[in-house]
Picture (tube, rainbow, N blue to C red):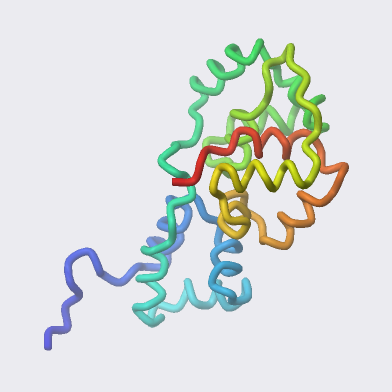
Length: 187
């Protein structure tokens, strides 16, 4: 028996493990929740250079939460804002109940979580009224787009419990409704 790993199955370094998780649109905390281990255990697992090969295989096998949709580039974001009637940082901040600085920082951050891209895609045309989604409508829309709650939570960098709590809150804010509306269909 050979001690060499088959091509494409080399052991993942700590950095390669983290990069692969991020490149698939996951947050480490969400992977821990999916694998039903604590955040502490997940950290130890990633940093253990002698971890079992099954963990590297599990990392490689994580579904890609980006669904073939790359993060919105700065140019695409400017085009999208224009197509939607000319949203400005100020008007988005007011819509999402955030500061202009926060929204501006998010616009400029190319490594932002995908929930922001979903919200940018889902913001209505500036002249349209987009009423708040009741919790049942929010869940129905995510089901229509074929997103299981656990994977949606992972895409948005939260635990399934946090997602359920957010969806159930009647005062959750328009940001979450925009993210739900802008969510691509799960492939």
